[in-house]
Length: 85
Image (cartoon, rainbow, N blue to C red):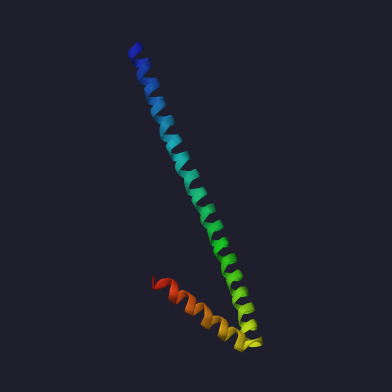
């Protein structure tokens, strides 16, 4: 008789663990979707900021083309010296 009671408790425990597994899987899927949405939003924000920065840079180059050319030349020389070591 004690064996039957133990078997029933074991079956209940197995069912509870199965339900718990399903619940954890559902929670994991929901968290993954939320994380994906947040990542997508961060990427979109990053793209917008980069595009704004490029716009400002283009305006500066248009306003001061000679200064921009000399600056780019100087940066190129410095990078060349750094990478040749």
